[in-house]
Amino acid sequence: MPTKPLILVLNCGSSSVKFSLFDTDETGELLEIQSGLAERLGQPEAQLKLRAKKETDTLEIAEADHERAITTILDRLRDDGLFERIVGIGHRVVHGGEFFSGPTTIDDDVLNQIESCNRLAPLHNPANVVGIQLTQKMLPGKPNVAVFDTAFHQTLPASAYRYAVPNSWYTDLGVRKYGFHGTSHQYVSSVAAQQLDLQTAGVLTAHLGNGCSAAAVVNGTSVDTSMGLTPLDGLVMGTRSGSVDPGLHQYVATQLGIDVAAVTASLNAESGLLGLSEVSNDMRTLIEAEGDGDVNASLAIEVFCYRLAKELAGLTVALPHLDVLAFTGGIGENSSAIRKRTVDLLGVLGFEIDDVANSQNGSESNGFIHAASSVPILVVETAEEQMIAAQTLNTVAL
Ligand code: AMP
Image 1 (cartoon, helix red, strand yellow):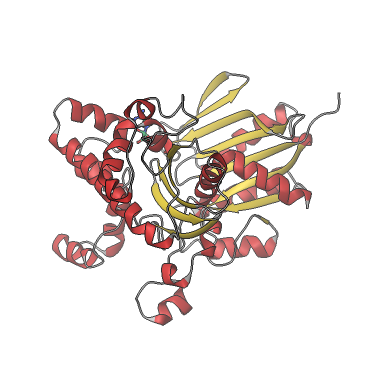
Image 2: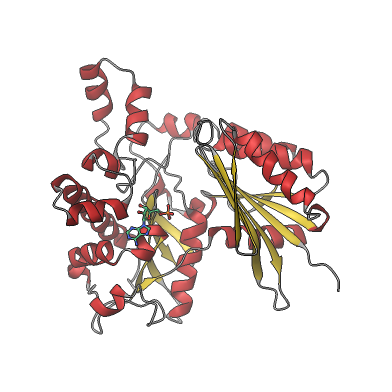
């Protein structure tokens, strides 16, 4: 039997590395055959979990950095004799600035451009660069493809992406809205349009995981989104504040006698659901705490849903017509309570939840969770790794 080509997907976060290995079945579908997640990199508890054929293997890799974690993953794939079958490596790259509007084969120039975006995403892009350099070294001659979180949102009109700041900040410094989670918004909006068999589609998407963002998508084209210059903007997230008054930075820095970098670090790591609740950044934990009467947890959830509903309502001005709202991400896919509380705030737009379908996460109703009289609401399982693999396969096949 001829061996099937494999696509490796590498997703390097600020303190984690995820990988997935896909092969193609007879119908051309991509099938994940191995995956893994290295977490808490740089800390004593750093761990690498590997999953193949439904078996999970956990390796302790105390204090490991990105390089060691990725090398451990690649060593394992080589020892399993899989290197020869790999025909392309897809890298999730967080920030592509204005350089990239689609998946791109990585050469020296492209890598330089990605590195030049490090200043726009200092927590993420440097890790992406490490991943690219390592696969170039360990799998020489195999094509590497960058799939950018920002690319899908490069279609935003200037009215949506420009901030009302001095023009030279845009022309000289690249200060504008870029938007993130593009692979997820692209996939989820296309599934929603297909599910409803829409010829022209005005879609709202809500990607709600540890990071959260919403987008307005018209006929497969992103027209506005909640994240901005950085992934700190927009919705309330696990540990990120989302949008705040730009005057806050100076006020807090002056009052606490700290610099702006320290304020930004707090807005990234100590804010959001964690900051409001002082309980957890994890929505499941907060819902439980609220059930136990914790008022701070309750307030955090309230703010999360209110800000989400307000953002979704605001994004409708970018749509010619409103056809569907699609939820995705760990919270969007699994939390009936958060969907219900958010949609209850959006009755003015014609949205109403069906409680039974919602409680089943749409599993018995093709993903749909709305009442008969409502604008459609859908739960869609996101498939970022699968999308990166598909885009990598298409790009290497060109
Ligand atoms: P992600 O980053 O997409 O993996 O999503 C992580 C978030 O999803 C965390 O806040 C989890 O608590 C949340 N989550 C996962 N399952 C549930 C659930 N059943 N109910 C509420 N939140 C959930």
